[in-house]
Length: 196
Image (cartoon, rainbow, N blue to C red):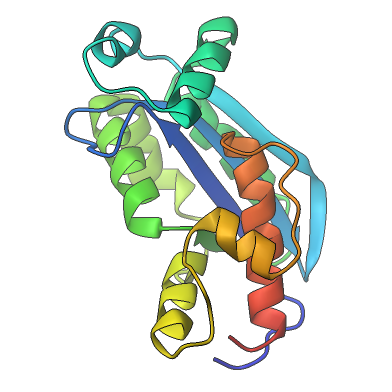
């Protein structure tokens, strides 16, 4: 990959009740905009309205990260994904350059976002008619980049936490969608500036 010193992209992260978008629930979405290599504002996040999430989560094996997300989700204010998409749309529309989408494990995050979008007819219409407008067609996946270099023996692990440690990036809010979006930004910038 060529060195990209001043990229423009928006990092998006999700928190869910598990790993299967066909059964599990999307609980939180976080995002952080970068314009020409500089962070714009603080990371933002929102909890998604899911009427059956708590009852479902009671039936599956628990882990620390998801338990912590569920505690915050219970106490938070919930919105539909449609509202989150509008917020992301407004954030990106203000950028003078069409931002790429950035994820750490794009297939995972996109599968939950797409599944939830299809459950909300309003979100689906907004996504296909309007929300794609501010985005470029380029996608950055920090996990895919790390996987490529891991196979070449240049990285120890593709996990977000391990990669943050490798690049001396501190995650002050781990296992939160906003906190992970922020470190995904820092990780992507480090990789792109090094030409990974």
